[in-house]
Length: 251
Image (cartoon, rainbow, N blue to C red; front, top):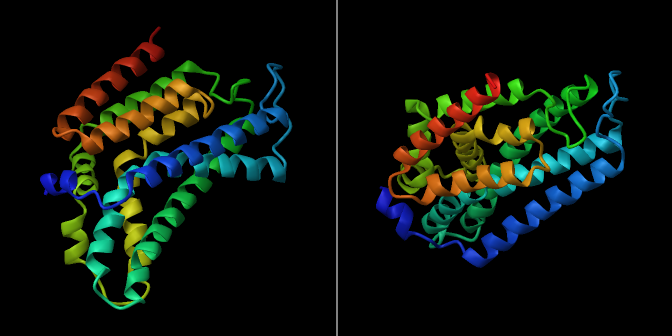
């Protein structure tokens, strides 16, 4: 199963790379615009003014672009597998890869909406600094320890193995209904979130404009998807996150 994940590369790598860079660029532009609108709280002790509707929409666009960019590589093999399943069927069936991708986007957009609400709560209570990161290192440390601990769990490893080789599961569970591809796409995205949900919360703690944090999360996702011994990589990354988080908790 793992070997198949490395051999099947039907999705055009150039198109995937361009889409990934475009989404990251949109997230960076939204972050810059958000700071320009004065959404970041001042260092004053009083809580900042609540985010207005335009700022909240900009925050939602920022998180959506960032999360879709981070998790897009985890959908590439699955979309290629759906295309293999439906490439010799009717024209309606050939729309399945698009419906599958739409299901992934809907699930990740829903997760982004939840993170947007968390971000608004943190902002309106004055817990964010000028870079939109949580101003308390201990809070970031707790997120790191939680994410690192999750890296060692059996649920994480099961989700990771599915993300690396999704084709057998897609083939065995494929339905004939028109909307089955949409629901399967949402289910695939849910499994990807189950694998990485704590890791992708790290930019919320460290700030979405922190290039080191975003790059580290993106690199970890790619390494776990492409490295031969993914379980070992996940455990080592978890150990590093626990060590880093412990240092922030007990400086």
